[in-house]
Image (cartoon, rainbow, N blue to C red; front, side):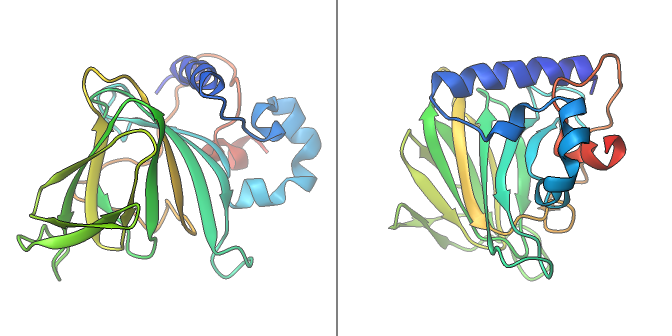
Length: 224
């Protein structure tokens, strides 16, 4: 991805979150020079990869297959005591986050406002393939008996609990607008705890055609 594209996505995301009155912590808006001055007091932000996160999953087309995320809080296994994480995400209409599950992380995905979020679901079998067996998920504590490949649509205010090993892909429902999506979960480890059904790139290779508006979490160690 080009840095200019990432900067444009960041500006669009800030506008959408402001529209929905979702406020980020002050360090979200630091410049590169601000980070260099404050990196000594922001070690948790850096080491636990909090902050801006934009990916096209190696597709080359962010708006077809991609995701905007901001990690607000996150623990780190065997390093600190925090056992939980929280993210805010923006999902465009028909913008796919590809099929995956987590070995360790259990998570709630929450529609915080905007359009509708479509989530397609499969349980996994012992070989980490799609299971053809029925299974159960809960939305806001309500039980749903699903068949392999069923979809659940979350309208604003609704959430789904995804246990370990449940494959899921999601996208914004066509014609309903972009979606502000929350995630509350156990500790998040995007390096070691994503089992994608197909081989993809989680973090983008960035072409530096202009200066960063804000550093991504994946930029910290390179810039700082």
